[in-house]
Amino acid sequence: MHYTNLGRSGLKVSRLCLGTMNFGWQLGEDDSHAILDRAMHNGITFVDTADMYGARDYEGTSESYIGSWFAKTGRRDEVVLATKVYQPMGEGPNDRGLSARHIVAACEASLRRLGTDRIDLYQMHHVDRATPWEEIWQAMDVLVAQGKVVYVGSSNFAGWHLAGAQAAAMRRHSLGLVSEQLKYSLLTRAVELEVVPAAQALGIGLLPWSPLAQGLLSGALRKHRDAAAGRTMTHAAARVAEHRHVLEVYEAFCEDLGVHPATVALAWLLARPGVTAPIVGPRTPEQLDHALEALATTLTDDAEERLNAIFPPVGNGGPGPEAWAW
Image (tube, rainbow, N blue to C red; front, side, top):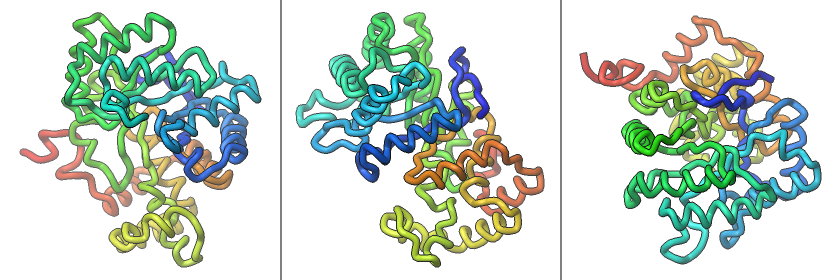
């Protein structure tokens, strides 16, 4: 396993992050613990969740499964633990968003479910246009001062949101954001226009979610041909049909390369500027193994050119305004 700094911070994280969105929704507690065991055995010490993952009636099941694994194994201090706040966690009007009230209440609830005294990376799950940055940072600063939160990150922000958040943090002499969790893959490259360059300029590490485009980049056509069970068969059949032509070319390219499609997609992301750690959410040990193989896979310049031809960047490629102007 390789480790790197999370953005401009001094925190070291594994170059793959274990995503736990499947915990509770698709995996029971024992299977979730098995995935955590296998990830830790292979050096993946960066674990990402959210208060609403696996939730049944706002129970925060994913966090609870991680908490029970900590209690069983005693390995809390080995893990860089990330969770999120923003999504509804109750029926009330203040049980969601990024008000100071909800941030503090949600943090306390996450700590209880996780069975820990601190969250290493507390991420805003979405931008809250109704709450001023000064209020958000006041709440985060209090949690940091209390030792309940160590670092703060964001998710699904636009480039100008990153800039606005950092400007507000600087006015308070706060560290501000150290990471941005963004939808980024070979199939989803719009973030290269402004989010990626903004994050690089501000020293914010990038944590791509859905790096396999909801399974489309993990051999989806082969799975259909083999009638394999899983999300691609049930949830994304329409998306497979929509992208069939490009997936045919991609999977043929991976076959020529002799590398599993999921491994190629992750290896490509690992080599992107500013990327700290793609977030992988395996449902089986085999899926985790394909992700781990990406760490030892280096794509040649020719392979990258072929991938750019299969999955063209937006506009002229790279950051704006050059991507869309002269």
